[in-house]
Figure 1: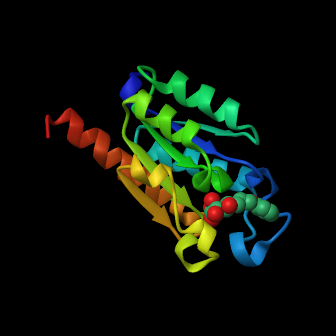
Figure 2: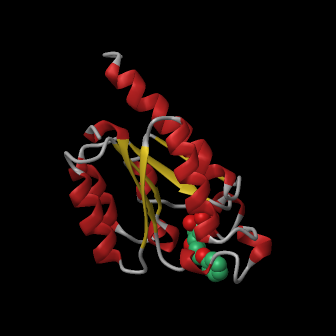
Length: 153
Ligand code: CA2
């Protein structure tokens, strides 16, 4: 499959707990449910979704580095690293790929410490507040970005 049709979809710390704890904030879907929806959405759009989750900042940085030249774009829900990780921001810059930042909740409606995102500074756009459906919206948006780039736009 061509590099541009492979999308790295990364999930940060504690998102493996989805559906098990805090359903009022993050919904009742498990990460496996979301993964299945993403793979189906990607297949419908001719995209391969490389869906991963890690609780480790270093592992996320390594995956971002490996996407360069091998994937067409990065969709990332960095979870709490959104608000703390210059390392993830730097890796995203170095990847030289379109980045979409994604959140289940709307961090701007929550505590003040969630109002700053290092990732937003390097993302093409941000999708937040739509629960698990946001993942499908992000894949749609990335498909449009990749198709437009192929058109020479
Ligand atoms: O809304 C989002 O997607 C967040 O990225 C979720 C992060 C939070 O730190 C961000 O500000 C917004 C937290 C993820 C924790 O996920 C859990 C899931 C179930 C139970 C406990 C935590």
